[in-house]
Image 1 (cartoon, rainbow, N blue to C red):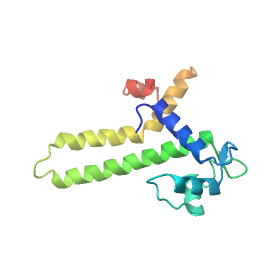
Image 2 (image 1 turned 135 degrees about the vertical axis):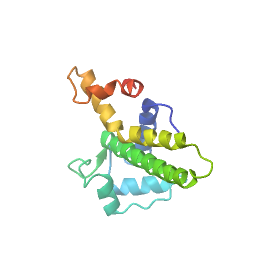
Image 3 (image 1 turned 120 degrees about the vertical axis):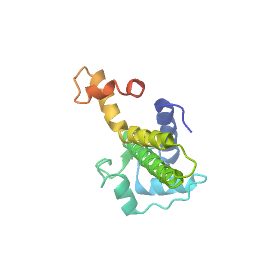
Image 4 (image 1 turned 30 degrees about the vertical axis):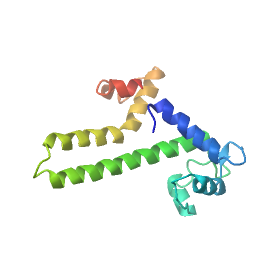
Length: 152
């Protein structure tokens, strides 16, 4: 569990340093596999194909094919976003099936809005980044729609 974006970053950094067995500041395939295997409650076997998918065909990797801390954080945040999207989709489908009986339509709307927000987290980060740099962002008009998220 995490309480803020900063807290999530801190936990991702802890995980990175936990699985960076050789302390090199980057993770290779072997370290990723062994590190995930050592985590309690995380029985995942990572294939080379999985790693290619996770790293966007190694676009997130350095010249040695390894992930540094920043790339690892981007990977984890992206996977978390995908997980939230899948979870919201399943919940929305369940609500749609139950809607005819007892569920209020507003719950489906709330889940749709949450899914939309999660899908646009990257845009919100771009708004914040452009705003901090003083440049006018093409997404500037969206900033007022999500002031709390853009200020986070």
